[in-house]
Image: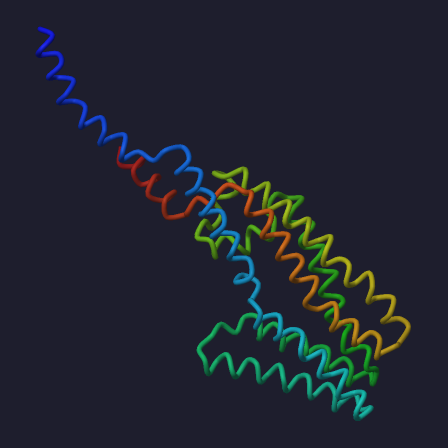
Length: 252
């Protein structure tokens, strides 16, 4: 091949090479895309735990109970007031066609507490189911992390669209979900450690006000820590992508 032909060949091939180079993302672009995907996944934390409305649904009934009890000094009146508010939350969500998961779980817990407190005549028993649930929740979180099915991953997987690909395809996210789950154990474990001793003192006022005060702040802290952990984790692998790859392999 002459020099002129070789030069012409290189000139003709250059645009194709340029197009390929332009089509392929650079390392910086890939890193930015992964960071954006990780941030998007991390931003689902608040949504998965019911958002601000979900926190209000589980906090306000306890506040109404202690206020009503201080006004009337009647366990039944306070219990029915809290239960009525929880039921109202469910009705409002139904009318707005919103998810009732968090509102319904709230009314269920309030109903049990109301029944126990009215049955025993002891106002502090209104808070007993919530305290026991906190202990059980922390134990479940710890067990899930130990068996490599961290509950935070189980809860967030469907929200992010990755389902359970983080268990087999994304070890970095498995590690992040495990770390986040242990963070929830530590943060949410503070509540029963503080409140259970108060329960046995029968100081209803202090128990009630502290229960309300320790409702939202630990949740927000746990969510923030989870968000920070997931920001640094690899982006999620969408379940649909994995299914498409499996179908392609099967066709081969």
